[in-house]
Length: 348
Image 1 (cartoon, helix red, strand yellow):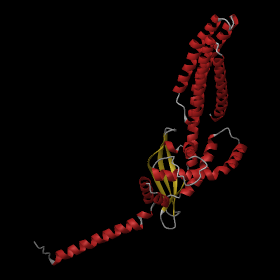
Image 2 (cartoon, helix red, strand yellow; image 1 turned 180 degrees about the vertical axis):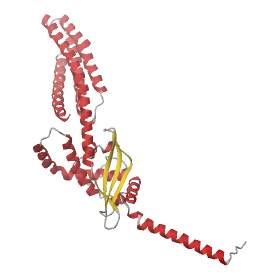
Image 3 (cartoon, one colour; image 1 turned 90 degrees about the vertical axis):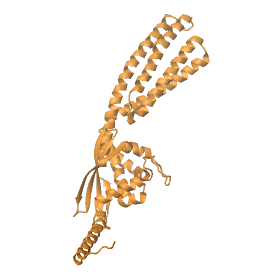
Image 4 (cartoon, one colour; image 1 turned 45 degrees about the vertical axis):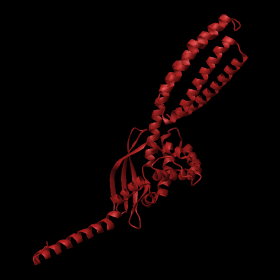
């Protein structure tokens, strides 16, 4: 059925079409002429690049080289900020020494960021360059592996200066709290906005370092109490061994059996209990090497006690040799643990 429009109706239709066309045109102008050249648009493009693992798009809106330059310096400075034991002279010396590692640190940091964009996971290695510092070291020191992005908290733009500051709210697992990272954006000559620097990354690193110090202090206090209690038990058992030996001699079967009973019923159970109690204490990242050393000490001491108890039965030369080797191993590990413990005491 044909539609017939009056002259007035046709005029209204033409006017409506013109209005729609102008609306579409103005919307397109707003989108391409204005919105695409705003910080908000750049942020959207960065998010899409990360989701699509699009490195090229990501680097269009993020100046990765500038980011890693500043972040590398902030990492070293933040670590020194958290160490109150350093004098000004020591800080100056460390800063000068750290300059030697700036380039490999920067290369590793860049690799960490690019591989995250490419894969969506922290810690990958591209294999394109010889990275002197392992990515996992960077991730551990910066705490990035334990960071969960929450939301964009704020966007402040200085149109005249051509800068903008974005507040990125993140949750950091080790700190067990949120932190707002401040990302500075610069308007480039082409008009698009590009992220140039995380301006408070040093504060973020300092926060993590202090949280780790607190966790380390808590761990050391808990394990020190365990060690002190069990050391008292073992010393008491050792005195009983000496007293038993003084009342008899190793050539006497009754003496050896009495000593074996002390080893099996007091010393061995105490070392096994010590091992269980130490393993039950959650070890923060900074204490994991010490925890492994303590576990190895317990294992060596347990095996030594078992071998010594067996020798008291058999008087086998091979068994006492094995026992002596295990004792030597335990003593070496205990010395290593003591040195590490003293170093960590300074970090509390």
